[in-house]
Image (cartoon, rainbow, N blue to C red; front, side, top):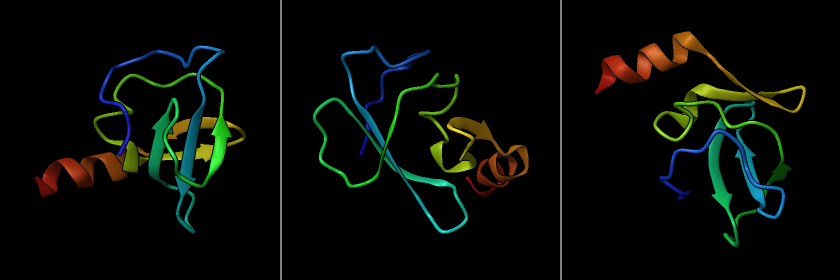
Length: 77
């Protein structure tokens, strides 16, 4: 699931598709020719997204980190 390469943004010729749950948190993503159903994302990819994608929500077409959710992921490891 996803590309482990750290990137600041997706190139214009690449396609990033994200899937969210009912709360809006990212549950899956694909960069390039991956085949998941979801919505296309063309914005900036925050540093740390690939390490903890489940702590991010899509809000107004931007990936936004939920610090509390990230902290709960870190404490559960």
